[in-house]
Length: 234
Image 1: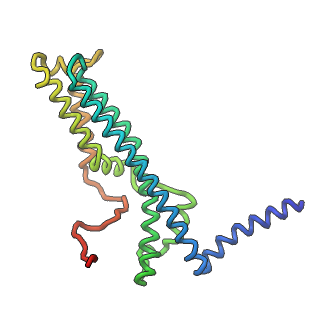
Image 2 (image 1 turned 90 degrees about the vertical axis):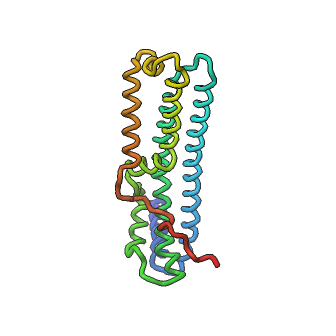
Image 3 (image 1 turned 135 degrees about the vertical axis):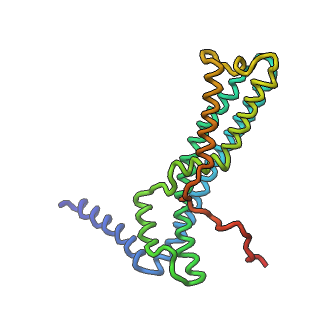
């Protein structure tokens, strides 16, 4: 073994022992945790900003499509359906970003519930093996909420109202907005019959509504509990 290999092994061993010291020494541990907490809060804030940006772009898209669809002239009604497709793409981006944000927020809540809350009012930690659980998640990060729950929550919070707005606008656009033509004729898309388009849109909204309001057990970790306001502020 060369001197370089010996030096590398010693450095590697020292790096491992730094973590072991913090794990077994209370003072070292408490000095490390605030730095980790601030870093995790910063990460969560960045993920939330990306989530908000996705929503902003979806709203801009809906606004632009509505303005174009009702500006008059020869603008086709199916432009609103293109808007629905665009919102769906933003929804898929949003769901993944929400799951990443939820995972970071869950790690923050583990620290707040088991370390900081306990330091203010000593009591049994809600999660007995919280240090082991948090370490395992840092080594192998995983999502904490299922894809379908995330999809349902994001639809209910943001995207379902956008779908409804575009759907109502499309129904108005193919009916009352063009009374000289029938619904079927106005709803048609080049290459697709109006009947097929009407059925497809109806099925789409039925599926989206079912996903949005289908009852399921909550897995996402909430920041606040209950609907009754607290009495802490005096």
